Length: 143
Length: 493
Image 1 (cartoon, rainbow over the protein chains, first blue to last red):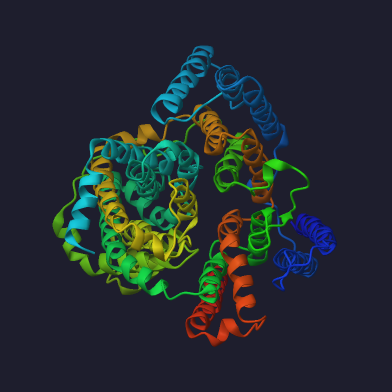
Image 2 (cartoon, each protein chain N blue to C red):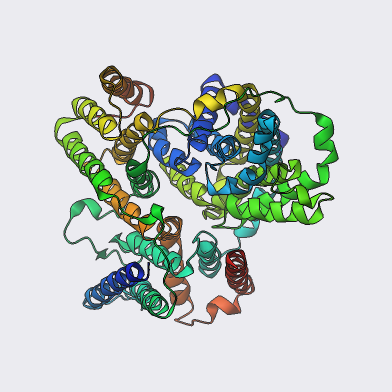
C-alpha cells in the first residue's frame, strides 16, 4: 500500500508541477486585476501540497496490506474497457443499432454469460427497444 | 406559499404522464438501490440524459422517484444478503440481517420501508417550509456569501472522503481543475482547451458524472461478478406494518427524521453520515442498547428513517442556493439546468409552483415507494438474483447512450469513457470519486464568485470576513471540517 501511495502521490505531484508551469506561462493579463490563471494556480498548488503530504505520510507511516478490492485484475477488466472503447468508436462511426447489438453480445460473454439463446435474444431485442424508447418516447435522436 | 400554488403543484403531478414517470422512477430506483454495486447516484446519472426532451414535472417525477426509491432500495440487500446497496445502508445491515436470520426478514423489510416513507415524507414538508425561507434569505447574498456557502459544500469533502482526507482533497482539486476547462467565466479566455473546439464550452457535467459514477463502477464489477448474490431464501412474511409499533417509537422516528433532514440540507454531506448519526443517537437513548447489532427494531427504524429524510433536506440547498446537498443532488442540479432552470434564490421567486411540484413528487413518490416496498417484499429475493452478467452490460450501454444524448455529441461519450477509466483507477488507489463530483459542481460557483468578490472589494481579501454572513459561513465550513474529521478518525480508532 505504501508503494502504491508514494507512486500515485508522485504522479499527482508531477501533474501539479506541469500544470503550474503551463498555467504560469499564460501571457494574458486581465483588466479586472485577477488573471484567468489565478484559480487554477490555487488548485494546482493545493494538489501539489496534498500529493507531497501523501508521499511524506506514506514514507513515515506504517505499511498496510493492499485489500483484495483494491487490487487490479487487468485480465478481467481490460477486455471490458477496450470493448467499451471500441463500442464508443463504433457508435460514433456506424450509429446505435448494430454496434449495440455486437457490444451487448460480446460484453455479456465477457461477463460470463455463455447461454447463446440469452445472448442472442437480449443483444437483438434490447437495442431495438432502446432505440424505440429514445427516439419515439424520450424524443432523443440516436444516429 | 399560497394554497393555490400548492394545488397547482398537485394537479401537475397527478397528471397521468407525470404519475407514470414517477412510478417508473421509484421502481427503477428500488432496482438500482437493491443491486449491490449500483446506487441511487448511478441510477440518476444514467437516466438524467433521457429527461432532456421531457417537461419539468415528468422529468423530475422520474428522477426524484429514482432518488427516493434508490435510497430505500439499498436496505433490501442489506437485510437479505448482508450487503448494503449503498454506504448509507451499512447501519441497516447491522440489525436488518440478524433479524432476517431469525426468520423475520418480512418484518425487517417492513420496518425499513415504512420508516423510509416516514422520513421521506417528513423531509418533504420541511422542504416546503424551509425552501422559501432560505431562498428569501439567500436573496441578500453577494459574491462573498455565495463563495462561502460553496466553501461549506467543499468542506464536506471530509465527510465523503472515506479513510483518507488527503486523497479526498486531491480528488476535489481534480474536479475543480476539470471545471476550469473551457472559457474563463470572467475574461472569456480559453483555458486548457489545447485547440480542441469540442471542449471550448467546458466538460459537460452529466457525461462526466456518468463516467465517474456509473462506468467506473461497471468496470470494477467486470473484475469480480459472475453470478448473483445468494442470501435469505425463506418465505417473506409479516410485512404489513403495525401502527402501534411506530407510535411507540414516535420520538425515535421524529429525531431520526430531523437528523436526516438537517444533515441532508448541509451541502456535501449525505445519507451515510445521517444514518450513522441517527443510529448512534438511537442506541444512546435506547432502553435496550444491547439489542443493537443483533436485530434491533429501533436500529433499523433510525437509520432508514434518516437515510430517506436526507432526500427532502438535500433538495433545499440545491434549489435555493444551487449547491448540492449530496452526490445525487449534484447530478439533479445538472438535470435542473437541462430543463433550462437556473438554481439559486431567484429560481423559487420566478417559479413559485416549482417547490410545490417537487413537494408533491416527493410525497407521492415516497408513498409509491411504500406500496412497492410492502407489496413487493416477496419478490425482493428474486430481484437480487438478477444476474450481473446481464445487468452490467446493459448499464454500460445506457452510460454510453446517455452521455451521447445530453448534447448529441460523440465527444461527450469519450469524456464519459475517459473519466470512467480514471474513476476506476482512482477507486482502486483508494481515491473517492464523490469529492471530484463536488469539485466539478462547486468549482463553477466558487471561482467566479471568489474573483468577483475580490474585484468588487478592490482586492481586499478580508472582504470574506468583514461581511457578517460570509464570515459565519466560513466559520461553519471550518467547524464542519473539524467535526467530520474528528468523526472519521474516532470511527477508525
